[in-house]
Amino acid sequence: MKTQLHIFLTAVMFFTRIPCPKWVDHHPDYLKKSSRYFSLVGILVGAIGAIVFIGASFLFSTEIALLISMFSTIYATGAFHEDGFADVCDGFGGGWTKEKILLIMKDSRLGTYGTIGILLILAIKFSALRELPSDQIPLLLIAGHSLSRFIATTLIFTHPYVRDTDDSKAKPAAKSMSANMLLISAVFGILPLLFFNQLWIFTVILPMYLSKMFLAAKFKKWIGGQTGDCAGAVQQLSEVVFYLSVLVLWKFI
Image (cartoon, rainbow, N blue to C red):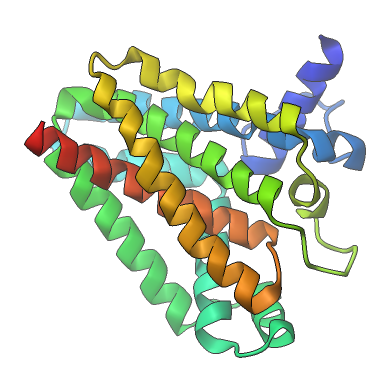
């Protein structure tokens, strides 16, 4: 149990800015196993967004509460996945070879493709949530964050890590994923869906996974696999697809 707690807290330290005990560090052995708790970290981040939204709703309009909630989750993660999405936009938008794409994604500077991409995906996320029932937004935030992180772990499971260098902090977490680790991630990823009263909510997993397959096909074609940035891009896209899918189903079912 203590080992599993250490692995979970390693995941919290790696994927967020949430303070952890001093005995938790980025030890490679624990990082390799931390992706099993990727979805559980999503529940934690989503809960932060949900609590902030509920609190802000007492003082401000739904729109302002949503923006503050989005800011809180971005702050809690240090824009970890948003940065990955932006890097993928820059890399695949401006690179035409594997080497060039990987080089651009490693560059800390934000380019035109990344700027446009992150602005658009945040705008779509805000707009979709704004159209959903406000009393359902807290649970939707928790489910969106957890389930999208599970979808991201499926990319780690199905596609090999392609960076050859050993200086990437994300390498241990993004390099390997066993079937048991994927199952643990799936349990925590799907868990929030059980709190909805509608069974149709489970159908959103399909479009989310299709969005992963869409990106994964591009990753396979151009770089032969995935990197930590690729997993971050899958998380961001599948989270937005979750909100859009729920919005469509809410209107027609």
